[in-house]
Length: 321
Image (cartoon, rainbow, N blue to C red; front, side, top):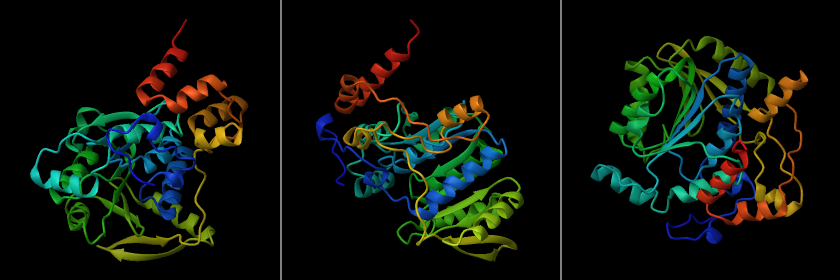
């Protein structure tokens, strides 16, 4: 899928029918781990908000947004089309993300969700002005690849996560991102970050006690015949390495574009806040109850109008009368 430019109209923006249509790098192993960790936290009543630094076109954000718990907040921080504050960061943005726009992110996200997350458009260094300390249970860092910025992002997230919170660092081993690797392992050796596991692209760690989560993860991996794993020792502590090349992706949120084309209402993803609310009312676990089909006129409006107009429609619909 070709990334959109800033001057494209609503009709020209991508219309993803499924998560795989959204451009980005979010592989099966990481989808399975995101899903398992968030479910593990929820089952143990580990409440807290979700945070993503660096969103690209929204692939992992769409996935995370489907797994919010009741009352939880999801914050996405990205420069999008804003200028960077230094020459090195500007050079990286122009080289790797020249076509990234906030409008494209919003269009992709609203294809799968009724409402946008809280968006902070700017450098990741300002995130602590918008997210409370010790409020985040899961943070995904995938912003700048420059050492100084990644180091700063890690230190900021350390103050934002809860005692049992998990942080995920993308591109920690990519050869074109040595700054991410340096900042990641420096945090392990000098900043108290405990490694949990690694995949081909992401590092998972916690500043809390890693023991219970690590043991539960190993039990889950042993129960899965489709996920290869091994345990190595790093700095005197176990580190799980895994690969899921033969595994299937977990459940994804369903795009309204796909639902409209099929004539069916989108299904819930297990673990979504709406499903958990239904489960609480019925005394059971989250189900897959169908959502009501939108009226044809409203569905057409949401499909074709710009995201800012769509949000106004949704807000007016829910405003007390």
